[in-house]
Length: 404
Image (cartoon, rainbow, N blue to C red; front, side, top):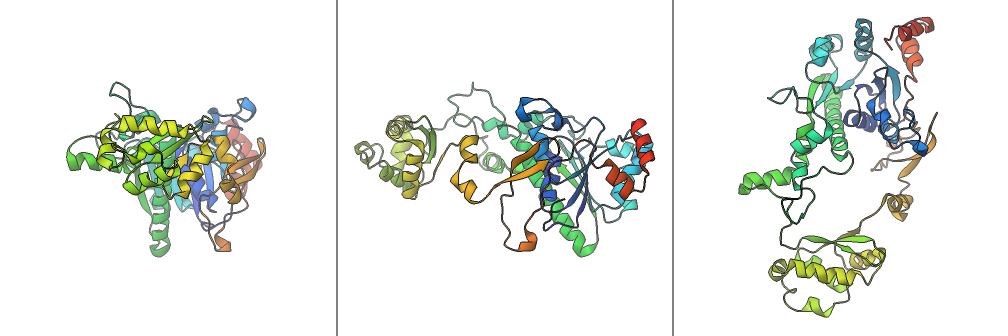
């Protein structure tokens, strides 16, 4: 277990895939004790790549390893009445329960908040569902693709499409699932602070759709302000553009407002065309955007990616190279901040993981003693025997009965 500012917080996680596990990973990385409950077949993230050495193995899924660092892991089959009693025993001693079953599923098993708070009045219970606990969509089953597009996020992607015939797409990877995890961890931290001050627990209802909508708020605001949905179709005005350099790398350049444009022009050596109409004033540049993009891309071909990036930055204008994973990992910036940390795992060995994106100055607040994600059922004996008082023989019988 890691040590950090949340040391002392006790969390039980009954979640699958990304959003719930990422929430509790963030808590665990800060020192909370997280007991991850998996069904006997394991979290579905174990069956998703990439895998170490491209060899499918539920213990070496990069997705699972990353989203479950610093947790203890046990198996439990809640279809069994005896397993539900074990679940209650774990929750009775917890500060927080994070779960992602469909609305009503835990209630059918007698494990809803109303039942559990009788055992533990200070319990903070968090339920993550596609559309929340109420409303006409609350009972709908949904996968990530469904909730992402239900949030409206995909409607504006890919940005600057040439026409509306280009279908919308979702964001890369599972970016929305991680966003949901971040929102949930903030809600947990707020509820935990309240509990520390009042002793009161509470129930937190997380809608995946709403969590992702919260990050698309500007597009939604534009609709109810001007009555028109923003589109993924390219708009003929200068805000930013992507240019390809002579080494085939890309730089995104921000060209608005005027001071940003002026910095770009200086970085390019004040080319003659940029000092003449129609490129001097913003309105004219807007009206000749396609022509402007051609000019900028011709100029970019004179420079290597990082050379152009540094030239523009030196002039105080905003820009960024489009970095590959290799470039990010080898960046002198991430190296200087020691962002990647080596963490050992009993099967995968020592691997480097993205670390915390923030730094505490107080020594006692600095997370340390990290360990890898649990193997399937790794801490069964520790939790069932040492924590709940079962004998080793009883644990073997639980396993044979399919309860764990």
